[in-house]
Every structure is written in C-alpha cells, then in structure tokens.
Image (tube, rainbow, N blue to C red; front, side, top):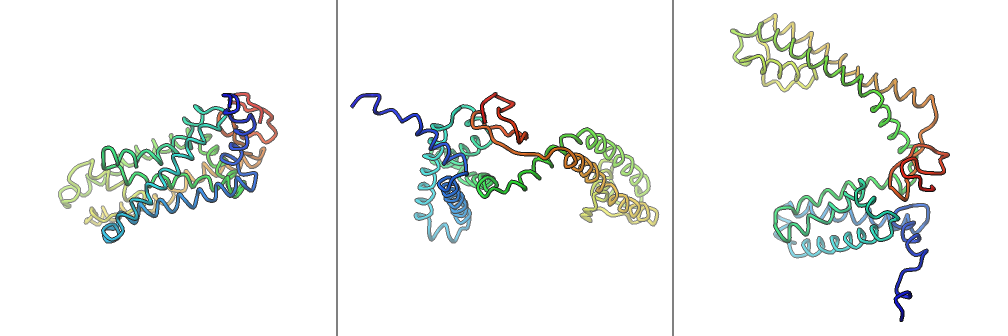
Length: 276
C-alpha cells in the first residue's frame, strides 16, 4: 500500500467539515444535536460531583463518565482542527478556544489537581443551538443588538461619566446632611456607595438616612433612579430602530476565517476574501 492511498480523499475533509461545522444537512443537525446532549450530560455530571452525597456514593461512576466525555470531546476537537480549511484560524476563534477549554481542565486536574470544576465552561458551547435549529431571526436580533451597542457606545460612555459625577455630588451632599446624626455615613466614599445603591434602586439597606432632610433627599434620588435607568435603554432602542429601518442584518459564517459577515448577498468574505 502506497503512501498516497493512506492520504484522505480531497472531498473527505469537506464532508467532515459540512457535518461538524455546518447544520445544513441531516447528518450535521444530528451531529450537533448529539453534541449538545453530550455537553448537557457532562455538565450535569460535574454538578452532581459537587454534591457531597452523590460524590461519595457514585464517585467511581461519575469519574469514569467524566473521562469518557473528555475523550469524546478531545476526538471531536482533533477532527475540527483536521477538517477546518484554516486550522489556526479555528483554534484562535471564539468557538475554537471554548472547545479547547472544555477538555483542558480534566487533564489539568489529572496532572495538577484543583481544575476539575472548570469543566462547566462547556455550557458555553450550547451557543451552537442557534446554528443547529436555524433560529436565524434570533441571530439577526442578536447581531442588531450588538451593532446598536457598538454605535451607541460613545453616548453611553458620556452618560455613565455623567452618572459618575452625579453620584459623587449626591453622595457628598448626603454626607453633609447626615454626618453628625448618622453613624453609617462615616465618609464621603461610603456616602457615594450609598448613592450608587440608591440611584440604581437596589437598596441594600445597610446604610439609611435618619434625619428628615436626608430621608426627603433620598426619596428624590430614588425617583431619579427610575428615570436614569431608562436612558441607556432609550439610546440603544433608537439605534436598533435605525438599523431595522435600513438593510436587514444577515449572518453568514466564513468557512475559511470563521468570522461572521452581515452581508446577505456577499459572494466573498470581507475579512479574508474567501468565496462564501
């Protein structure tokens, strides 16, 4: 048998890529569905191991199952690297890093100990559910929200800077009002902490004004909090309305660089030039 016969056929990698990375075939959907079930099961095993009663009673079984899933995910990761058109791009992509982090903790725990429960990071791989079940509208909404946040980041940054100044002023005023009458407001930083808790309507209750003037001032701050919370929402909503008024956002994944492009009619990836 020659070395040439041992090499994979040219179309073999494409077939594996379509099954492992895409979900436009029955085999691809079945593979990803089984993968999600395996991820959920492995995460459930780690959670059960954190319960002392179950760990004592089923330690050996849970330990064996954990290694079975680790080996399966390792084989899957190797196949993903092998069939990817650009293995390095996949390994450095978001899902590539997550896939690696899913299997590393078990080996680290075996060699060093103490990293076992980091395996629960596997739950992040469930993000693939959007690709599996073709929930394109949800993907579009997610991309629209991301774009809206990106476009409004300067406005939001200015808004939060204003809030920072406002909390310093409000905290300082409350310190002046309550100092000498309330043992809770011991300094301006503590008063600023109270202003943040009150302005965000969290209200831990660990510090509270006791003077009539302080209570009236705190009531004003509480009412201001409701109005302030709505401001970032309004900024992002305006940007989302502008995006929806324009062209619709389409999400397509490049098989070469594994990056998303928002152009529905694009024939080539705008990042690497690969034909889509």
